[in-house]
Length: 464
Image (cartoon, rainbow, N blue to C red; front, side, top):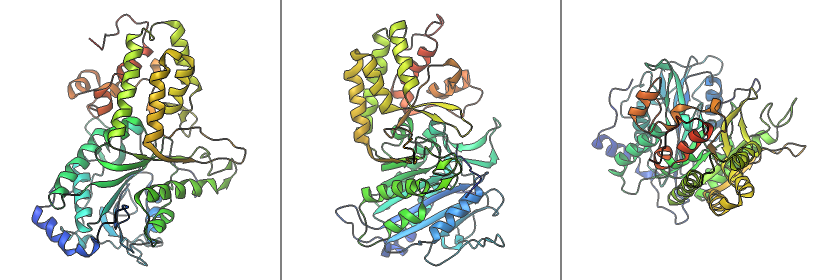
């Protein structure tokens, strides 16, 4: 999901190794020596999926990137797909003082001839993981660098996925989208291919310019895909990230460190919306709760998830789910934790992880040793977080990471706990969602499901 305010086919999956190596050698001048502080040259690849009702914002962000352009060791590449504003899908290399799109005529001057196919790739389903792999390998082979940033641009649904492509309808009747496991698997495949050319390759920053993806479920899935990730626990306004702001920081001299780049992404985003005034108050209309997190991936994420699993197991083993005294405390902690709202006023079954752990530990002191570890983990994984603060001081309180949780059976999405294709085929209306690492590796999903149906004797014993 991404809010839209009133203001403001590829036949080959991967390039052959020889073609990729040729492209890398041809662009070797971009691969300057690495800096010890991680401030070496960058390739920024924006997977700009505007093949839906966000296409106007896709063009706006393209024009914003062109305000800065590639320079000072930073190369910006875009794969652009829109629903009706442009025909098919196109490669764009964002050079300084070069405009690709004519807002008056709607004409697009692409750079597809610079890439190995040397022709435009027709209509690409940007919700297809195979296409994501192909695109990442193509972009980063064209412009090798010391650091790589990939931005997934489009609607986002938290653990449910990102990059919804309205031009492709799946057999189940849904539009194509990248599920959370599919995204990570696609990027892992791209990493294998790119390591054949550069054994040191790894994605530096994975960014979500899309709603709701700063969830522990998404972060855990991507823990080995990149060094860092940025995303929002909340809905993202249609205009999205502040590209001119953070790209200007990346291209300055001396070049910033990786963490300084991450902070610039967050600051440029929050500053953009905090400085706007609308009829509903400070911040873009209906967006007074805009927030963004920059998180560190890797082993610490795994430790945090182990602590979440330990809490879920204790809730099972300790009899907390069926005891009315504890149920009241669990429900009270959930109700007092900031929920994630939609623009229509509804609240999603996503809660702030750190704040929920804090409240639960206060209400059930027996659990505080477990909840304290979760709080510490969130604090260490989240490198930097900011949110819009309104003139009256009202904010969406957040520690920067959310988690799927609800006390209500009616908010349950059965697909959340489909751990394999058999589950999806047996219990689901389709097989789009299954196999998310967080639900496979923890009892959190079983705990949530059981808690919402604790008085139903037909509930299975998931531990058995």
